[in-house]
Image (tube, rainbow, N blue to C red; front, side):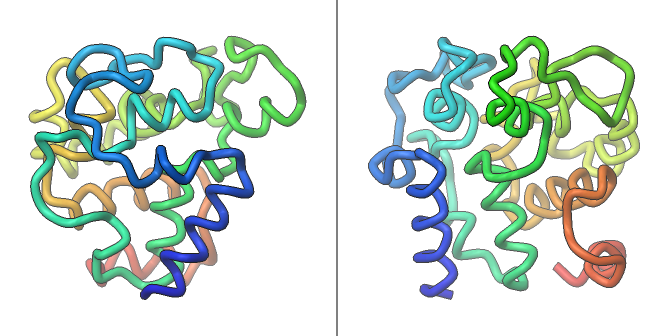
Length: 186
């Protein structure tokens, strides 16, 4: 498990994330977060700011870290990549194509919304079924707030909801991997 954690930290460094931002425990509402739960990053173009606002551990969070969960290596890698912005959602692929953030629209639906982590987890119409399945998580995140969703519930359930959303848009592994999620192997 330590090798995977080291690999994820190296991946974060490779993708421009500051190691300090990965390890910080932000209970102050600073470091780019907007308000208590970070509805929107202050600078909606900054990857590090998005991480700090949506995915960094707030001071009020209970329990262990995501990398400590008993998930398979591919499952843990997929969850951490989503959290670190190392994925193929339009917000990230558009960054490499030098598109303005508002032009990085979701290619999985026709809503015209920016295809970011918040849209995938909390707004995308096709993931309504996931939000219904994991309603206990989404009821706690009122108003809809990524940080509250990610850190407010049982982390295994949060990870399963993230993996289900990623599987639904085809951003994770093989058919066998996706079937393993459907059989509650997490």
